[in-house]
Image (cartoon, rainbow, N blue to C red; front, side, top):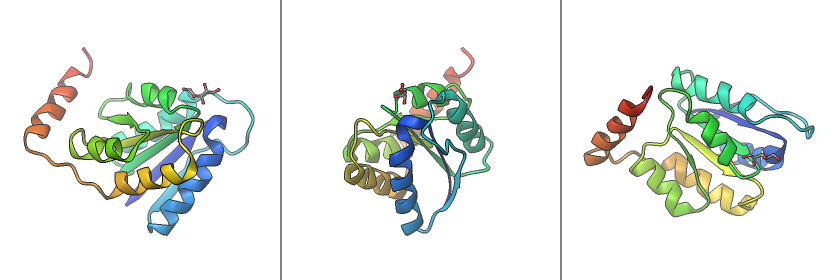
Length: 146
Ligand code: RB5
């Protein structure tokens, strides 16, 4: 699976942990930055990740900031993106099974590295359930541009 990942300074350390997990899982990983702990603006990293997923250049995206919230708000502005902020394994599974989330947002100041690893593994290995959820996700798509 091709994964594009990005963070701001608040998510930099957790991004390195997540990249190790992605490598262990045999994922093809591209990191769009940031690369150093200097203060940056999270929308500048949410946008390239969201665009690359929306355009089909990558299968899924992972965004990390202090809380995951700013990244998710920004990424969800891009058409075709369903970005979920996840802080527990159950929500990780549901965001895939029910919502077909194509970007995962994590908060380094919220989840520790062990929990983040479990979330990432679950999120990447859970398939969309389809069925009635397909109809609902299609209705989310219909809201774009309103
Ligand atoms: C940066 O201090 C922080 O605001 C950012 O990482 C993120 O948590 C925003 O949602």
